[in-house]
Amino acid sequence: MTKAFDSAVRLLSRREHGALELYEKLKQKGYSVVEVNNALDECRRLDLQSDRRFVEIYSRSRIRQGYGPLKISQELSSKGIDKELIRQFVRQEEDNGLTYALDVWHKKSKGQLDLSFDELRKQQRFLLYRGFGMDTIVQVKKELKR
Image (cartoon, rainbow, N blue to C red; front, side):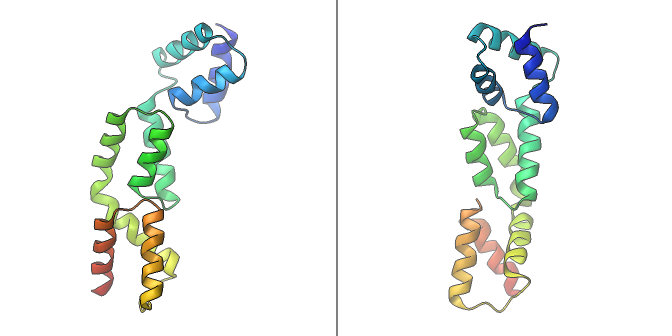
């Protein structure tokens, strides 16, 4: 195999990469466009690189870190992931959004339920920043009132 392919395999052995991210890293190492494209094609053919697998692993990691689907989608988009793969991720996770948002809320508020109006607004802004939609935040507020 080629040096570009060997380099790609070493990068992929450390962690999953999106195709664009792997392309950029190989280009930075000084490989030609032809070498990089051939290496990427071979990696895909051998199923060493998969954008679908990258989306799954990356999104699971970011969800565990407390980020919501909007933020994760934006990050995936900036990494050159196909919009259809991103839409599939969002559809797959839409039923879990409330659970994720409640987990983040409880962690941030340290289980405190009697928050002042200002503290409540601060928590809502935090959830927005973390990538949860307003509809999910409204559901969180309803859940907390129960």
